[in-house]
Each structure stands twice: as C-alpha cells, then as structure tokens.
Image (cartoon, rainbow, N blue to C red):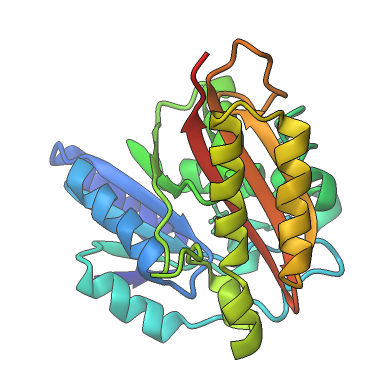
Length: 283
Ligand code: PAF
C-alpha cells in the first residue's frame, strides 16, 4: 500500500487505475482506526477493484472548545492496519493541502436543515466542516463510491444529500455500526473513557434498545425519549439529546411513518458518545 500526501501523485495513481477500467472506492476517515473502520474497507473492497482510504483530522469540523488538538493521531499503526486489510492507497494530506486558504476565505459546502438539528444544534458548524471536507476529498479522489459508517447516521444523511444536490456521480454506501460485545458502538473517542466510564458507556445502546421496544409496543415518542434520557442520567451520563426521527430525512415522525431511527448523544467524562438504532414500527 502506498502512502501519498500530495494531490499530484494521488491523481496520477487514480487516473492510471481508471484508464485500466478499474472502479475506485473511497473510505474517508480521521484515523485512529478500529474494527469499525476496517469493516468500511472490507465493504469498499467488495464493491470496487481499488480502495483508497484517507486519514485527515479535519480542523473545520471541530468547534473552538472541542478535541481537535487531543484527537488521537496514530498514523503508523493505521497504515499497518489498512495495509493488512488490502487497501491500495492511503491518502494522508496536510492541512494546507486540503485548505490552502485561511479558514475565513475557504469555500464552504452547507446542507441546510439537516445540518442544524441534533448533533448540528450541539456542534454549530460541525456539518459544514464535514460536508466541505468530504466534498473536497470526493473531488480529489473522484471515486465511484464512498463508504461511511451508520454510527454517524446524521453525517451519512448530510453526505447523501450533499452528493445528490451537487450532482456528484458517487454512490454512497452506509455500513452498519460495529459494536463491542456489551453493545458499545466502536468509536475513536471511546479511548477517552476511563475504565470506570467505559463500564457505564453501554447504557447508551441499552437505552436505545429499550426505547425501540417501547415504540414498537405503542408508547409515544415523548415518553420513550424522556425515559431513555433518564436512563442515561441514572447511569451517570449527561444526555445531549435522545430523539426519535424519520430515518429518511430526520424529520419528526408522523403517525404514518414506519421507518424510524432513534438517535442519542451523551457526554461521559471527556467523551461525547453518539449512537442510533433504526427500526420499523408497525402502522
Ligand atoms: O466520520 C469521520 O471520521 C469524519 O467525519 C469524516 C467523514 C472522515 C470527515 O472528516
């Protein structure tokens, strides 16, 4: 696997593959890879002859008080894991390659509506940062498809909408969340948890499972959201939100909506944990 940090080499490699008639899959990441990321690579390899992974800790998607500086950077270990998984090329650009201009002069990509709710309400500007960097990575790599984890369900919908609205000829593939045996969704930020916090963290998944059961049994959305938030608090987490939404577009569900997702974000020590559960409600 080749490690590339400049655009000229990246484009040369991708062009050669394309001229060979090979399809290219992209797996964008911020590094500190875990089994969840490696599932994305496996999925990419099932769809395309060539897989490009990117590692870029994107400053634009972090708020001023967030963990950009502390975000774990483990390039040597990540490179080894990607190589073992059969990735063809790792693109790990510097900040100036991705953002040649100062932040205030940078062209931005905004997906209105979807970006301002849930995680977007708690993290203003976050999804503009995500949409902008993913759009740039799409233009740099020009893949046929790109693979993202469903753990970041709102991010996946923002990226799908951005791709559709900007007429990018890229197929967006979502991959189910990979979990620890106790239900905790894998995340690079789980590394911020102390052993004692780690033991409490599966409360998020448990609360979502109980909420989905409640909804299937005919309980109201307000009731299950409040109960899930109370369960998180009882486990020592500080819930940011627990919300039942329509899976298609994250709108508030009406009585006729059956394809639903319940999403939660909660703080635990230095970590902000997010998770979601998609489910069908009988009409
Ligand atoms: O999910 C992530 O790791 C990031 O938000 C992404 C999609 C790589 C954009 O920086």
